[in-house]
Length: 414
Image (cartoon, rainbow, N blue to C red; front, side, top):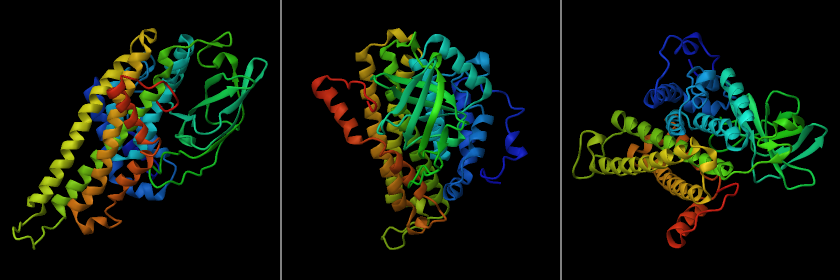
């Protein structure tokens, strides 16, 4: 059975009689179960490129979609610290599905980032009680969606070239600018409506199952009362509103780490089972796993990944504490310091992850380059999304903090 088949009874019922996970470790263990299922045919599903409806069903059945949702509405009420580790775990099995889940967590938290208390309560009850998945049409490199007023409604129109989650989402986050102003407005709308038209044109080297293609927004109507964070049509700003970028940059770093862990795990299994020792080195070994250069290579790569994991865990705990604290408490300086540490973590895992995804070929041998082995999926996935925004700018942010004591000002990418 593959995940692209219709969801079978065995898969759907997998957790029906299982105890609900309690606590962070149990939820991460559940995510590891999901990763193990996804890893079985990740390469085949990647090549088929089918819309991942069954994969999303798996996330929902496992309870991972409502991980951050309120307990009162059936969610786990877990922290962002746990969510980052769950994203990482799922990405070990399938980087595309880890990205979908990570973006969902960010957009599910969008109400808490910018909305009023009443709006937060309504959105969290809606998505948690219905086990809904979020997508978002908020690519800042495109022109903003145009918003016009029509009485008590806002009407969104325009095009976005990227919209991760696409047609597998139940809810879509829209963002645009009100005509005649510089006022940006976020709103959450049902995905299944005539005014949201997905082109199905996602055709990238990696992360092929993320449904990240373009979308047309055609006169999608939203009540003014649903404009996130607006009271009497006036936005109520907080520094907390700007945590969306650091939070999602750490989402990126964690699914990069999961992809790198998956590469190392897959390659080491191949080396143990299949790679042959080199018989012409003068210090011949019976098994490849006894070769000194193979042992050294895996030791070096694993050491780097462990170091990256420690850094991402530390900064994950740091931003989690801020995300779950009262929104009014966050200062600009504190926000900037967290953003710098996230930039450092992202810098390290991009460099180290790409090294892992490349060097594993040297440790597995020429036969491991066969398409049937599928080691290329890890490099393709990591290489594709790590181009999201130039890593050189993240390195510069860290350097400015070290030399000048400056923290990055909030933008769409910092």
